[in-house]
Structures are given as structure tokens and as C-alpha cells.
Image (cartoon, rainbow, N blue to C red):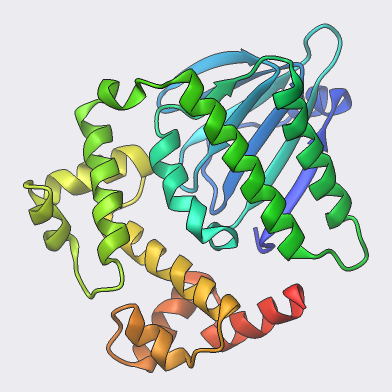
Length: 276
């Protein structure tokens, strides 16, 4: 996906089309949020498959292997599918990785709370259909959507943290340490030492949970922050690279282009044109 943000509906007419098409296990280079308003969905994620009846919310983080099959229920099916790049709401994304691991699917009651989620989706869809959509408005609406979902998740699972397995706890602790240190030029061994474990075991946990190595997750966090700074500030590119632990501008630009397909200058110019 090349766009920062996309939203589109799935209806009853799409159910048969998706059912008859090839729908293999896959992973994304973006984050995906699915709001189930009507119908049901069979979702394979975290090595298990279950059917969820609307209303529900599904969050699939970047790199997760999954497959979702929309299903009609009581003659109807209506989903909102939201896809966005990690850097679109960088202050939220990494918290989502920890919060939604092994808890990707959340069921709701059909009440005013869920209706507000559907209303936010309608507002985002309406903004994106404008001739010149304001992505700042969409970003605010998406952030509000996640705040409401997280509030519901905490009410449903108030005792979830004590019940997490050892791997999940380690992964959450890794993300916490990463958040405090990703600007430093530290490698896998630094984080493994902080967690009192070997680099190999930390890599195994990250591969199991995110299907990415520790190094890939560190670089992804740096890239998200780099994009955030390029979008939200006028800092020189060399200063941004130095702030994120890169020794010189050329090395930072090389890594940035390798990971995103654009130079930092190209990305900044494109984002300024989108958000202006």
C-alpha cells in the first residue's frame, strides 16, 4: 500500500466475491482495523481460527500472518475496513502492538458506544471522498476511534495483564524499553541484556509475535519516528538522522530509502503536499 490511509466498506455483495476468490494466509506492510457492523467474520490469526458475529472490532498489526473471511448473518454483512501506515499515528501504533497481541478480536454490544465507532468511520469515509481530503482531520478521527476501542478493551479485560504468557510479557517489556531507547544506536544485544535473556531468545519471541526480528522492529520504530519528524517539523534531515542514532546524513538517507522507497527529502515533500 502506498497511501498513508484508506477506508472502504464491505457489504453483502462482496461476501460471495471474496468467498470465490483466492484468500490465502498473508501479511501486510500496513496496519488494518476492521469494524464489523453487520454479519460475521471467520478470522485466522495467532495460529487459531474463530468466528466473530458483529458488532466486533479486529486489529491486525503490520507483519501479522492472518486471513479474514466475511460471512453473511441474518441476510446481511457490513464492515468498515481501515488501512493505514504506521507513521500516520506514530504516537499510537506501537502501543497497539502490545495491546492487541493475542487479543486482536474484540466483540461489542450493539449500543450507543459501538454506534459512535460506526459514526467515526462514516466521518472518515466522508472526508476521504472530498476532492482534497484533510488528512489531519482523518488522523484525529482515527486516534479518537482507537481511544474508544481501547477504553472498551480495558473494561472487557481488566485483568488481562496478569494472565499474559511469558512471551507476551517479554514482548511488552521489550517495546517499553525500545520506546525509551530507540533514538540511541543500540543493537539486539543491548535490549536482550536489559531483559536478562539471550539475543537469540529475544529474536525468537519477536519472530513468533510479529514475524519480524528484533533488528527489524528497532529499524521500524526509528523509521516511524523519522517520518513523524519529517512531517511535523522543519528540522534538517541530518539533524533528524543524528537524533535517531545515525552517524551521518548519507547513512540515514540510505537506510530510509531502502526501507520506504523514498529519500527523506522526497517523503517530506510528498507529505507536505498531502497535508497542505
